[in-house]
Length: 189
Image (cartoon, rainbow, N blue to C red; front, side):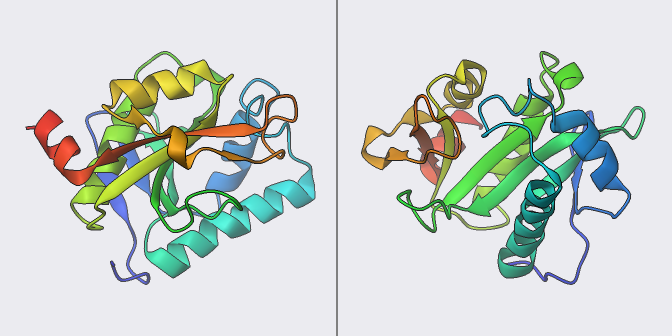
């Protein structure tokens, strides 16, 4: 595990994945706490929901040395959303497994940013944070998310699926995809 007191920063061709700064939060919530972005994530959050989500993201960093980091676009410094790693903590889910996740604002969709950030996050999961396997979780209705999981080389893991009504009350089954360190290395030589 990395030293939680040091600032995390990782650059890709177009993005910076980094620790959160106080000034990031307003831009993040303005861009991502919208009906379109939150459609498959339980809906738009109220003030308490946003505060709770922020506390969770900060606790992941403090406890594990990684979190869903702020995603900053290099060209203009815009906060596009988040992408990164946490330990799965959803009740009924594969508790403790390394989980990659992403959430980008709507005007960032369709530009390959999520894939670029997710590749960087998985590289970090297996390189810097020594994960043996990483998972990603979504609901069945969120086809763009699970299609990205497939493009990343992840495979469907029905044995790890679980139910959580906080994401999508109409279809509460969360679906899980995973990839092992060896599978990732073989597909990213």
